Length: 252
Image: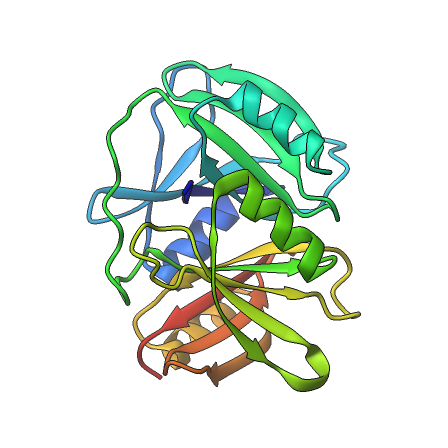
């Protein structure tokens, strides 16, 4: 199975985003130090967790978070995605000193990246509730059945258990790790969601305190805080530049 292993946001205001997420999540922001590349790395205890980059002027998409899925062969996987009904949004290219990547979309348009890093050092799986890590991966799909089949064939992800949400349909729990622990959920998106997206939940220590930091920093909470099956507390919101994000915590 091929997991998500990195996450970043393209935004119109890198400095403001760095200040907002550092405050809300507890990350430390610093320049990546990659020559010729303006990229801010967000870290906890010296471990990089995510990044921020400037959105190109005139880019035909909103400020948004995307995730990177591990690939052994980016060019071959890009072709495979297209054969499975996906779309190649940005052809494969190299980032000197970092790796080779491509930007793809699933059959209904949710965007994600694939990358083969230059380093083959495996990142340890974060512990449940570890602050600053990405605690949940959620696809608001154009169609659950179609898009699940795409990701299953692309990356070998495994279905775990469905959760019946009544009129909102099935929320499919899935795994991207070998021990089949929960990695995230997928559902057919609600009508109010403008387009299919991947939503990533950043782990914080206490959801109510985090909610207060979101609002104090100029963000907007659109759902929650609420407790979900399993006991965690979550919320969803928009940052001050309009990018959607989510938070998860073991504590209220």
